Image (cartoon, rainbow, N blue to C red; front, side):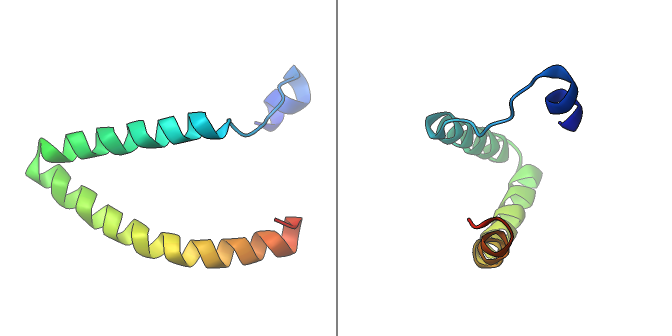
Length: 73
């Protein structure tokens, strides 16, 4: 990313929220479709999503505090 920005004139910016939302929905739909097609994939998917729910709760609090302190978010 640094090379692209520093040497090739690329401007890095956040994607617009509607695009992020559409990508999130497509990703979740794809993961669910794949999990529905294979019991082993379902087991891994469910385990990961359970972990992610716990992680997201923690990250929401800890990362927000850290970012606020570092960059004022």
